[in-house]
Length: 155
Image (cartoon, rainbow, N blue to C red; front, side):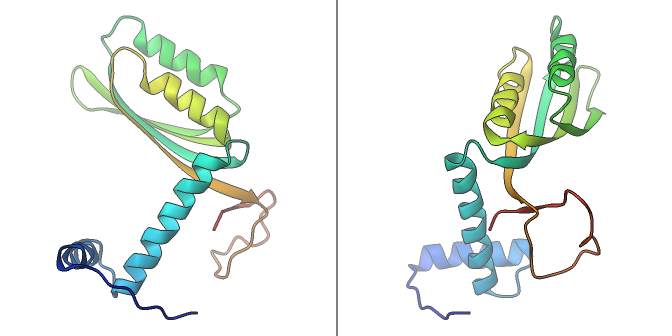
């Protein structure tokens, strides 16, 4: 591990310290490492449109919007090969929250997410893409080292 020195103005340092407090980081270094890893992962998702990914697609929609629930269900069925799991929550009499976990090529996952979140009646939508490398390795164990088809986040 390398040690570096950086200079931050007081306002930016206060922001880093607030992040450490809010998220429970034990050091500024760990907070900065996490921010850099996150930025690197997002950059990889933007530049590697043909790579594989896992994604969490979340959206809130008005289930009373004409044919919206049917269109959303058709989209999920049409892309069943990407679907890992879906959670549906009734927020109110009118609103539903769905979270879909997807796995597949980044460009296709992004296109499906855009197709869902731009539907009339979808009030909020966000996709969080995590690029993966098939069969990747990492330095700590989760007790699944011998799982066939295991994938790891790109670092």
